[in-house]
Length: 266
Ligand SMILES: Nc1nc2c(ncn2[C@@H]2O[C@H](COP(=O)(O)OP(=O)(O)O)[C@@H](O)[C@H]2O)c(=O)[nH]1
Ligand SMILES: [Mg+2]
Image (cartoon, rainbow, N blue to C red; front, side, top):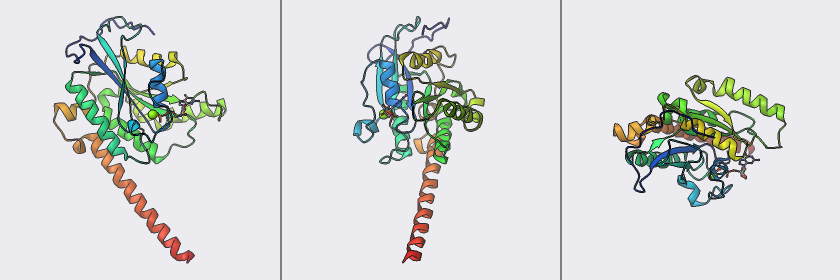
């Protein structure tokens, strides 16, 4: 768990509380285990788990860790694990969720916070890699950008689930790595298992804190803050809009199909 980097980043800008923040957003579909991960890092049940319909789960929720344990060189830093609303929530569109996350990340860059890394959680019990999952990956790469791929972590959750056997889990993990996640792994993203315990959660965080890329802002932050681009025109904003349009098109087609089916049945 110890931080061994010889050159921890210099604390320049600080928060109002006098600490320099290192933010780690936790992204992924609803039910993938984001809040569980955050609580495991904290070692307490601060975030509500398994309740996706409450209003608090529709806004990013920063959970603070201070001091950062076993990390020499990071005195004066505060870890902010950002729990986020799940993609594919039935009540909020992905584009709106991304917009809320974007606003939060832009504000944190304004405040001088660093991004430790971005976690994308994937539930191993999910059988198929759908077009939705593919869209999520596309959004993830648009949000982080190629430069930050090395601090993008694909976290496999629900590993302890007893609903599928061990060999199926291993097969699915291999499939994810060798097929679906291959493009972003080739760009530097890494895959880790979260075993629902403190050690496996902190192993991921410690790895990120050691990264040479700690100072690099996410592509979305550069676009919003440094280049003053409006969210809809950012890389991820455009991708999200495209995904939304595709979904609408799909729904229209489905409605047409159902209408036609209705005609036949009558
Ligand atoms: N067995 C098991 N259950 C998990 C794990 N992570 C989350 N869960 C359960 O999955 C459900 C959804 O988890 P939650 O953290 O709320 O997911 P979120 O919507 O992504 O925040 C809850 O009932 C959790 O208890 C895990 O690693 N193993
Ligand atoms: Mg949650």
